[in-house]
Image 1 (cartoon, rainbow, N blue to C red):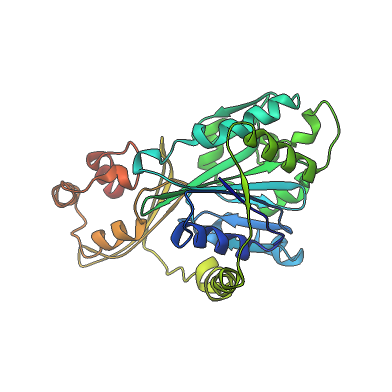
Image 2: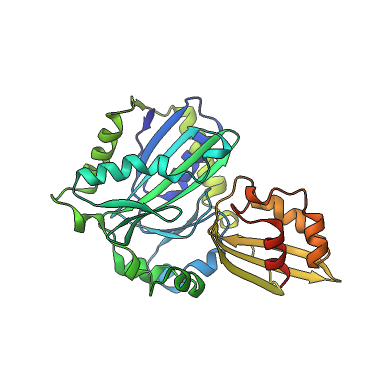
Length: 327
């Protein structure tokens, strides 16, 4: 495994690094850590404006960035340690969060933090979330990355993020603030966020050979270009959100699915799918497939009979999806 040492505190550059390691890097396995300035990180399939408190974000100069992976929006600041694994993988590895969170959890346990994986992708301590994880798969490689709330500003976290009522009710929680906690509050001995990073890295090195990987000047140019041309742009982070005549939203085992439809002459003219789900294929493929389809349940089921819906929504079948889409 190669350890990539970075000092970027702006998310656009770390996400560009993730994309580079996924698309062009030659080694089999990488890991790196990063700490961001106050930022909201939205999932690839989310509608940004619905996930944030825009007024608070603007007033407090909070960065808004979209990552490559699906999942929900998270808050980053200098009290939040983030980690990224990039490895060769099969499609079957998607949604295997246990594989990547195991060393993180075990390292925390050595520090006296009783961490455990819960639900799809969260690490909890005494029922409170200290880490959210997400994944992205592309052409035989997987990115599995996550947050570690070490000493984050919980007041800013709760003010910056919006949580949909549906998600709150489905998880039996009252607010963002009531379901998260800082790792530092559960540690037996005090340490800095950078000592925590080194502790986790050294723990992984007990069982995996790790060498430091230094990015070349050419690699840095490519990463900087991607950060500036894509990850820092309005189109990527906000995008145009057209007005939709129909909105379908529901919570499934695979996550929250929020679909916006524009129907004209009985057919789907426009389709946009948001949510905190994880996919094996690009959700844009499904949006394009639905474009022009007759908006009628039985016809949609018939037209989708050869679609492997689990590539988009794990565990959801065509009949369930068609019913949700058209009810």
